[in-house]
Image 1 (spheres, rainbow, N blue to C red):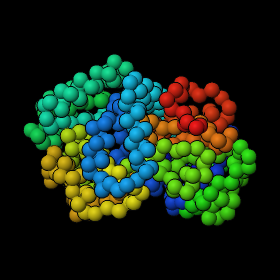
Image 2: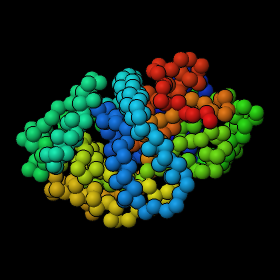
Image 3: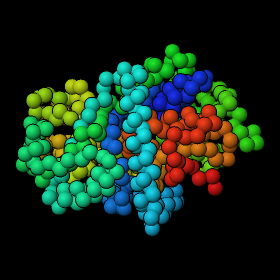
Image 4: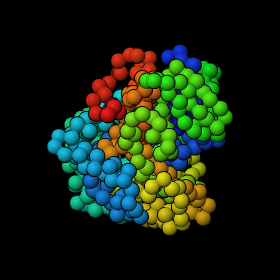
Length: 397
């Protein structure tokens, strides 16, 4: 269930294991939801849990209304930061991201996908923020991630078109990566089909039909689909469907915005992916266009957006790369990141023995998807997961 990054990578892993796989999704094509218009940054060196500051900024930007679901999610987030919980979440997230990057490299070689590029810049406009980021990154360097601190002049050496005078400096992660996530999904889906994977798109899942402790079938708009095992690899789920899954699904949508903007001056445009940390804006080259994303709002399940929502995305890039893009021809959309309170995904089963979960990949979906898929395939096949799932299992109560 689901044809985004989580669903397609899981379908591949299951098909490679010899399973007969059917993928069901309500969208008209693969990777049409949260996996479609993100920046595709595999920010392995930034596998931090969401901080209370980030959550606080998202709350301040949100048009909040009384939402019991968000209240429960928020309490769970606060609990995840108490005592030694933050360290345990960090270790679980790093464990998964490190494993996933290894699996991703194997997968990219196997399907001959040549769109994955290395080296990501994390930009800071204020000296204090840069100092704090470098200190915080000490935990990641201790865990073996390569990170370099750059002066504005060194940033300019990496990006000759950047207005380096606006920066205090940057962190450079030479082994972090980026690619077009939707293109990757669709390339992988094309490789899945010869293995017998059947994609049934434009086919909304209406309900699941259990029999005692197992799921017998799912009901879709096109009819009933029976199976021996079911994998929930959906992003933000309809409330009615979530209530039928037999377990609390700790995923809430965090709304963001994406703009895909044509490049009109290649010599003035970014050459690599980067995140303007001072503005919370990420951008990465996508051929003759630049993908820009940002924003984090708790706005329920709506996908509405207005021109003003894209303004902060444009402003950040205009300041750093003036004259590079044609903003009048930008394609803008809202997206929903399926976030758990700890910002880590969930695996395993709950009430139903043959319903497996691969959910909550959130804002690091591309960094986690390949490893999450391999973990899920191992669990479905009754084998021991390749990494310790402490802190990554769905809670059965």
